[in-house]
Length: 107
Image 1: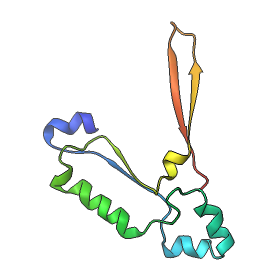
Image 2: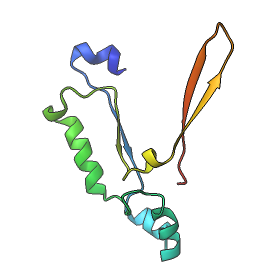
Image 3: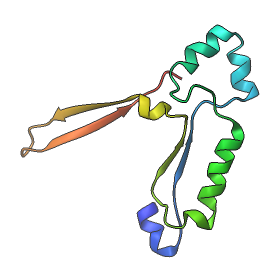
Image 4: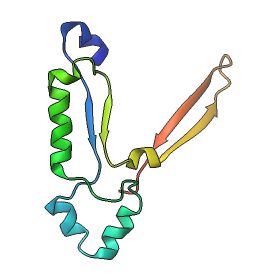
């Protein structure tokens, strides 16, 4: 969609939040043990705040991001970067090789 609509001055991006300090998550993680089991996987060492994702959305909606399109804007404290595993899968079909990146998280 980003490529299709770029010349129409329409920008298409994905906002990808990580675990946020919201009542829903904090009620689920109701003990320090549960919280720490999640926090150990977030490189920045804390849960995100909803305002941090809101600020990212404001940036993407602003003229400051006028040259940004077709991106995955991750606001996840480094979680996605910490859990990227690349597998090289060779497929012998006309000597083509494909690389797949598998993204996963423990949340």
